[in-house]
Image (cartoon, rainbow, N blue to C red; front, side):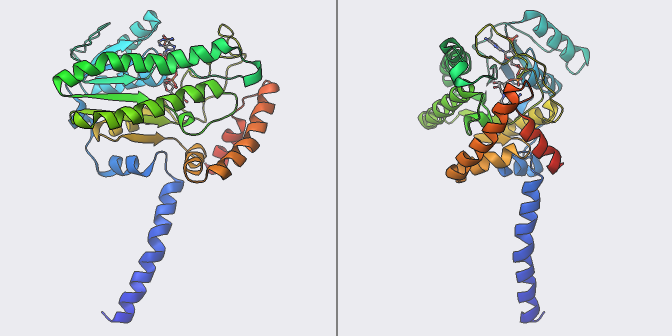
Length: 319
Ligand SMILES: NC(=O)c1ccc[n+]([C@@H]2O[C@H](COP(=O)([O-])OP(=O)(O)OC[C@H]3O[C@@H](n4cnc5c(N)ncnc54)[C@H](OP(=O)(O)O)[C@@H]3O)[C@@H](O)[C@H]2O)c1
């Protein structure tokens, strides 16, 4: 092969490779490390089978789907939430598909937990000026203090056994803030700060790992159950969730992150995924964009429409 041809080939590669990466990014529904792990990494079935996993907030949405998919892998489950009837339904769903013969359900099983999944949480749809302080306290108590206290309960037992994994379902709202969810964003940002600090303290315990999951919009009851201006006031209308990521896809990616010991993963379709990258690398642009989108969200909210309509529109354009 002549030098000239070789140079042409190299130049072609230099052009094509970034294009391929760009195309991959445009089609991405998670950060590229997680997608790379999905493509070539260890599979959840090999790593998680025979573990004991405690999932909080397992009575609906992401927690329910996680229970279902873990069940199929032969994992022993501890499921918790407030609505016992819903937990019973999830248990029947797991056992009913005959995906597991000896699935175990406990109320509390602190000592033998291999993996704790801090998943329970509530969101918020209300403006700061119209929201009572109790709502902010409720969000911090459930999303932040509840998670910290459970982690502190389980961690000493994991350290004693020299092994364990703590998975926390955070949110893209823990990286990038949005209007109408100030208390929710604050509680998720607090979790990010806490777990990043904890990670640096756990260096001396190599068997203990943390995995922080940051999903974007995912189909679940999160909006229906969101807090509003007052603690006991529920959402005014049901909101269409069809444009969000299917729960099963989000959970599949979560399992890959857990099996591959990834420390922080972002799971979201565009435009929210792109928004998170802009927030991380170009904060001033992100603030400008956030104000523009925020105005539209608030306008929709005040007109009793879905505040997420701008995202829905952008996603529809992408699809
Ligand atoms: N869906 C999304 O778009 C999205 C995006 C980013 C992050 N997330 C995060 O994903 C996690 C799961 O949410 P989801 O989307 O699956 O919503 P979901 O369907 O509403 O599920 C929330 C779960 O949390 C439990 N929970 C709520 N309040 C609780 C309390 N006071 N004490 C104990 N458990 C409580 C609920 O069970 P009970 O009501 O029976 O107690 C339910 O099982 C949350 O941490 C959420 O912030 C969701």
